[in-house]
Amino acid sequence: MMRIFGLRGIIVIVSFDLDDTLYVSPENFKTEEALKFPWNRIYKERLRLGTVDLFRRLQAEGIETWIYTTSFRSEKYIRRLFRHYGIKVGQVVNGSRHAKEVQGDKVEPMPSKMPGRYRIDLHIDDDVSVYQNGTMYGFKVFLVGPPDDEWADKIFNEAMRIKSLKR
Ligand SMILES: [Mg+2]
Image: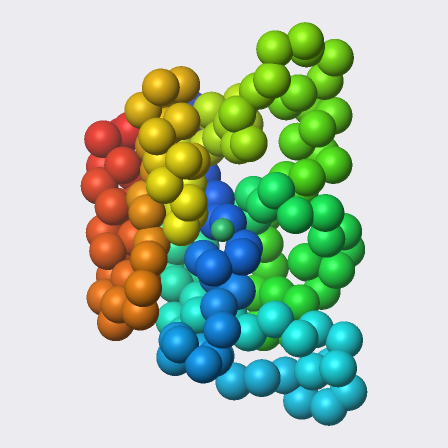
């Protein structure tokens, strides 16, 4: 009984920014294949190469993979894009959900992202200000930047490290 309860207690959540984190320009980055016509006309964003495999590896470890973007793309659009790549995403926090649930009617401006509000263990982003807010507000951010063939391994290893600490 205790063991079952203990296992259920281990939930690790990793969230990903979209723009310049998972959605990158094929001019500067290796990317996943574009979707087939006509989907490539609807979903124009290109995923950083390794995204599909990384999501699968994390999910195989029972790690939840969420999207946290300041953009106002709809949840439905985001889910469907990933669906076309065979990936099911966990929760989606977009600009409007953040505005409603994090900013709410607070007078003080809240940071652009508050992964801690959603018990997200690790947030992946390209924006240094998000990283700095993490230091200030106590949430963990892994910064991605220019092309890096190891990016997915680094994130996977960090997520596994967090998972082992939570055990
Ligand atoms: Mg970004």
